[in-house]
Each structure stands twice: as C-alpha cells, then as structure tokens.
Amino acid sequence: MTAERARITVFDTTLRDGEQSPGCSMNQQEKLRLAHQLDRLGVDVIEAGFPIASDGDFESVKAIAAVVRRPIIAGLARACRPDIERAWEALKDAAHPRIHVFLATSDIHLQYKLRITRDQCVAQARDAVRFAKSVCEDVEFSPEDATRTDPDFLCRVLTAVVEAGATTLNIPDTVGYTVPSEFADLITTIRQRVKGIEKVTISAHCHNDLGMAVANALAAVGAGARQVECTINGIGERAGNASLEEIVMAMRTRPDRYPYETGVVSEQIFASSQLLSEIIGVPVQPNKAITGRNAFAHEAGIHQDGVLKNPLTYEIMTPKSVGVPDSKLVLGKHSGRHALGMRCEQLGYQFDRRALDDIYRRFVRLADKIKNVEDHHLLELIRETHKPATSATPLIEPLPSAKAAAVAAPAAGTPAAGPPAASIAASSASASNSPAPEPIKPFPIAPVTNAFGAPLPVHSDHHHEHQQQEDYLWGV
Ligand code: KIV
Ligand code: ZN
Image (tube, rainbow, N blue to C red; front, side):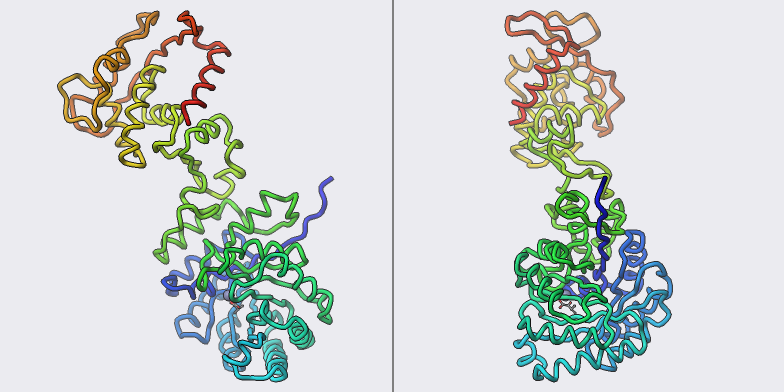
C-alpha cells in the first residue's frame, strides 16, 4: 500500500520575479503566451506581475487574469494602499485572484532601506494585509529578507498578519543566504510559534546566490511548507530563483525522500523551458539540470554504450517524462563504437565490424580536432573512408594504405554476399557532392573470429557478449 502523498502548491513567479532579472523582461503579448504555457504545465499559481511597477505590467496582469482561468493569478504589491489598489484593479476579473503583499522585516532592511522601527513594521504589515483582505479573499504575505530577520520578530509579524487575514505566509530567502538545515529549522520555528498557523499555508521562496535554492525549498517542504515559489529555468533576481523543473522532478524521481505530489504535467517542462528561452532570448545553460541541452546527452563512450543497452544505466528519469524528444548521443572524442555504429545506421549506413573499426579510428582523429562530430561530418567521413582513390580532398588524412586496404577487403571466410562494404558506400557518395546519402543496402556482417582465428557464428550469445565487452572497452 502506498502512503498518501502531501500535495504541494506550485507557485510560478517566472512572470514576476523571473522577469525582474536583467535581460529577461517580457511585453504583454509574450507574457500572455507564457502564461498559457504555464497553464498547460499545470502550475497552481501564476504570479503575473507587479501591477504598480508600470502600465505595461498592469495591462499584462489584467490580460492574463481575463483569459487564463484555471490557476490562481497573483499580483505583487508593497505593503501600502496605492500598490494594493492597483494590484486589485488588475486582478479583479480573475477567476481566482490573489494579492501578494510584501514588507521587509530584517533589521538591515528596516534601518537602511525602509527607515522604520520594528513596531512600525508590524503595524504596516498588519494594516496592509487587512486592507488587501477587504478586497480579496486570497492574500499572501511575504516578510522580505525573512532568513536574516530575528526569528522572534519574524514570528511576531507573521502572527499579526495571520490575525489580519493572510491565507498564505511566504518565507523568502531574499538574498539566497540560508542553507537547507537552517531553513528547515526556521519553518519548524514558525510552525511552533506563530498563532493561527494551522489555518494558513506556509510557502518557501528561495534565491540561488549560493546555489542552494532548490535544496532549501525542498528542505522547507520537508519541514512542513506546502507551497513552493519557483521559476522556469530558475530565472530571477541575481542568481535566480529555485527552478520549477528541478523541484518537481526531484519529487518525482525520489518519492522515497520527497513523498509529495504536484499538479505539474512534467511532459510540458521542456516546452515551457524552450518557450521562455525563445521569448527572452536567453539560452538555457547547456548543463542545466532537466532542461539544459546536455541533460540527456551522452558523449563518453562507456556512457553511450550503457545507455544504448539500457537507458537506466546513466539516466535517472526518461527524457520523455520531461518532454525532451529523446536522449542524445553526442559524437565526440569520448564516444565509442556502439554509438558511432548506431548513428551510422540512423543515417542509412550499416557496417560490419571491420568497416566500423576503420570508420571509428578516423572518427576519433576527427573528433580530436573538431570536438563535436555532426551528421554531415560523419557522412563525409563515411564517403572518404569508402571512396575510390581519385575523389576529392579528404576531411582527415587517410589511414596508412596497407591498413586501409586490409579494412576494405572482405573478411576471410565472408560468403560471397556482394561487393565489399567500401565499394557500396563509395558508389552512393563519391560521384557527387550532394550531402544526402542514397539509401544503402545493409553491409554484410563479417563473421568474427575467436582467439585462434576460427570464425564464430554471427548470432551466437557468445558473439554477442564478446561484442558487448569489446564495445565497452572501446568506449574508454
Ligand atoms: O525575494 C523576495 O523576497 C521576493 C518577495 C517579493 C517575495 O521576491
Ligand atoms: Zn524573490
């Protein structure tokens, strides 16, 4: 019997906190496009913007509220009347509106930024939430810089805003300063000391300045938070916010450690990431977890060989589960014959073992020079390897001719099953410079010999094992 999993509310702030990061601003039409995709992705809350910040942001929030009807639509407001009125004006036609009020609570912010006392801070927070509650049932309060706030004072402010009607208490690690165990302790303290806490949802909003945003958000959930605030691709102020896809897939991949559920349709993750990247014109870092182009790419030969035999060897989730079309075997100098052979087959060329060995040697020399071997390089290499002596300049220097001749010749004991591999490939390619390969008949598979030179049956298990082991060694 599987234990009941707690449901975590996913609050996406790509359109607000994410948009605040340099180079990531979006216009109304772009925000709308992304909001529709976030809806498909299944997030519970879309923070659509900060309506008082600009007329454009106001119009964007209003437009999203009018047409995206399933999720809660939130708008941000400082703890003052004009902000809250403006936010409500933008949100009032939403099917599920939420006003998100924030006020800094750390002494550093009170003293240097707001220039108010702690008592003034409590009063301002309480009054703002009370006013927001008078227009909107769903009110979230964030004590900005909570993780650098005196915990006693933080609990005092939070108790005041719960009394005033806040329904969600969001705990921001505004400057990305906390660490998982400390953040978990803070959530526990809040649960123990804030009066009325059982009536409200605790939320975590983590920034990534020390690279711990996702770990901190997950630690908060472990300690009882039931909402996480996050962004697609982890965009956001400075080093960004906790990344939505990493939080969701951590829960999905490790339910033994994170027994929680979200409403996110994980198959929509990649599309969401790509759309955001396209809209803001900021590429996803290649090694970004889940959505980077290398997240499911394998170049090392041992890895490629393993993945081709069983993806579980080097993949902890399927590319399909996050909407990535397929895992990618990148052909570079670390690749092995298994992956090379597979790619050749996908390009329409099937080689026997000896021919593949030949191509493989040339391929490794080429990869040493040009890093990633693309399909067009590979096609050229195949043609060069199997061309008549007179054709154009080779992409890499040919192998010493005696060796090449030995490779091109049919293996001893090969039945007369047609021309040698080399001539079949050459016939398709050497006559023209056209990049597209002709459909090629499979090359005859040459029998391999055992250690004493005797031919082995092609389809025996022994042969298969032998080949697999060789593939493994060749991948190194
Ligand atoms: O990081 C932060 O403190 C914020 C608040 C407005 C929630 O983004
Ligand atoms: Zn933030």
